[in-house]
Image 1 (cartoon, rainbow, N blue to C red):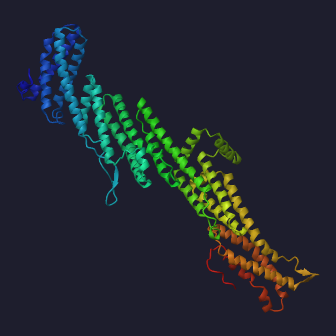
Image 2: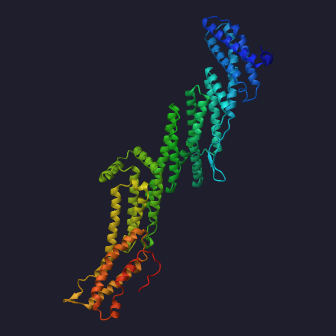
Image 3: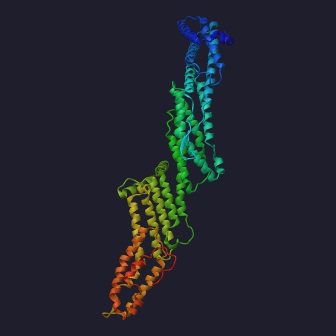
Length: 599
């Protein structure tokens, strides 16, 4: 029966048509049984083949993406009929070839191939007609977060039809054709999705030509795309493949794995391009850590146990490792910048905290917001380089305090701060005044210690013995400052040597008060301009000065002021009253730019 007779043959009564399909299925089953028993009555299948051929013609005349889904009951019978046709072609192919077998096989095979073409065409049409939406949260004009439809979007009806087509094609031996069509169209859809998200396939040459500002924009966009892939895109693709190949989940998994690997290979081109062409300054570290974290999340995506999945993990790990090594290299430049910091030969005014100290500690504090990532980066770096020296340092630091070994990143932080200490020590020698040198060292030492204590992340990594050593160093500089600054002043207030032959010498007494006034005036004049940034340190210094100077001066004045003939004479030599000393000492270390008003 030719396809021009389809209308007459099928008629318009759906019930009658369904009965004909059911009868044809019974005819096909009987034919298959006869073939198995050796009874080869090939003409008995002609009616079945005519009906299937006619059905294919009906579906071919329908519009694209609407060939199925109009009458689910009839279509179910049609799909079953095609499966019977597949079984018949298998059986005929196994029979010894003769004219009857060849004729029946050729006709059945031709109709079978037409059915597969019909299915593949509709499969492609349905899959290619999916809405390509992004599912990225965005902030609307009012600040409200809204989310677009899930990618990829296909109706439940379309998914059911594709699932049935895929199952029938795989049963018929057309799995390769079905999978090829699926892979091609999903790759096309994923490419379109990346284009929507403004993905640029940047290679090494492109990266070399681009400014950092441009690369920074691309890094931000790449990270956004990666987050979209790991949180939405991959899960959407897995769900789609499982829906389309619900009866063949191993096939679904393999197809998803292939798509995920293909997409990842494209996405990894960009971070690969970043690690090769140039050196990056220390400020660029944080963007590379963002990339590292995005790759870490990508590695967590489970795409199966196939060889491709192993390649996926291996390739992602390799790129992540390269990014990690770049991060180590960038962080190490912090050490180089400290070593090479010779910014002039002019000391910081007033012994204040040096800009290098502020920069280094603020940089470390910000870096430690990525503490877990940097721990992982430096641990991997040590593993790759087999750093036994670093392990010895870790054990030494840990054992000296009876605590666990310091991590590679913690070691690196301590090395950087020790290096900063050495630089600050060198810069302190620019001060001609030893007292100011100790103020400078205390300022920088206290700033470092306070920044460490303020950051839970940094403080948690530092060994207790190392922190105690830093505190001890600040106390040592405090004592050295007091000795250098106030020992000569206190010497003028020493009771020894004031008497000659058992009597108080007025000349010596006048000389003592005169020298005290000169020394104390000079200290007030100069050290009121000096700066102590940390309020606690400033208070500690003033308290320690007051606790020694005030009682000593009060005792000396109280004992010897009566040796002057008059209050006028006493006022000439006793310039400051004991009750004024505390107020005067309070003027120290305030960074005053105006001269002290002398009393």
